[in-house]
Image (cartoon, rainbow, N blue to C red; front, side, top):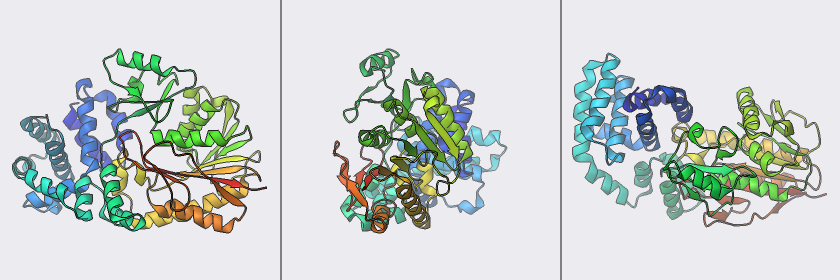
Length: 439
C-alpha cells in the first residue's frame, strides 16, 4: 500500500472513532516501507490543524461539503494539509496519489472537483494564511494553529489573552518522540547504538534518563524496545513519576488509574523495591498494562485489578497513591490531535466532576502520614487547580508539598500544584499536585 492511500484510509478510520496511532499501527506492515513516514506525516498534519483545513475547504470550494461523499471530503482535507505543510513534496504527485486512491474506491465522479480545489488552494491560499498567522486576534490564532475556539476562549479566562495565545501556538506545534531509558541502560552507549544506524538523537537536558529524537519512529524499530530497555514517553509524563518516586519511602503504593501502564512500568523500574497495586476500569487497558510489565521485566512486582476506582478496596493500606486521573487530554493535543476535535466544553466539566470524586477517594484511602500525587495531562484549570481546591476544602488534614521547578516550562499553579506547559516537541502539557495527609 502506498503512503497517500494509507493516509486516506487511516484518516477515514479516525473519523469513525479510531485513534490515529492505533490505526497506523494496524496498517504498518501493509504500507510500503519507503512510504511509512509519508503516511504518518499526512495523517498527523491533517488532524493537527483540521479546523483550518475545513475552513480553507469551505473558502475555496464552491460545492457544499454536504453534497460530497466522506471519501471526497477526506481526500480534500488531506490534500489541503499536504499542500500547506509538506514543503518539499511535489503537488502533482500528491494530487495524483489522492485521485488514484479515490478511483480505487470507485468514486470517479469527484476527481475533477478534487483536482480543481487543490490547485486553487495551492495558487491562492498562501497570502490568506500569512495574514491569518499575523493576526492579533485570539480567534484567528486558534484557527491558524488548529485549536478549537472554545478552548482558546477558556484559556484566555483561566490565564490571560497573551498567555492563551502562547498556549494556542505551543499546543498546535508538531511533536517528536522522547524515550525513557530503563535502569541499567547507559544513555551515551544507547545513543551511540541508535546513531550508528544513521538516525539522530540526543540527551535531554531536562531528565537524566531521557533522550530526544527529531522524528516519530515506530516503537518496534527502536533498538532495545522489545527488550524493555527503552520506552516512548513524553518528558512531562516521566517527570510526574520521578517526582512521585522522590517522595516514596518504601511504603505500600497504589496506582489508582494505571491506564496502559506506562507510568506503572516507570515506577516499578525506578523503585525496584516497590510492590505496586494498580487499578483501571478498562479490561483492555489492564491487559495492555500487564503486557507492558512483561516487556519491562517487572510483572512479578505489580498486582493489577480491573474495576471502578471509586469502589475497589486496596489489598494493603497504601501510604503513597498516584492518581493520574482520566482527563480531556488538552495538554497532549499536539501528540494526539484527533482528541481535540472530540472534546466539548461540557466534557471538561464532566471530567472535573469525576476527578473530584477520584481525588476525594484517594485521600480517604491513603494512610495518615502518606501522600497522594494528583496529575492530569490537561491545560484547563477546572480539571487541575479547581479540583485540588475542592478536595482540600473538604479535607483540612491535607497540605500541599511544593514540586521543585527544574525546567523553564514549569510554573506554579494558581494557587495549587505545578503546571508544565507544552512548549517543546518532547514536552506535553501536564499538571501535578503533591498532597500530604497529616497524621
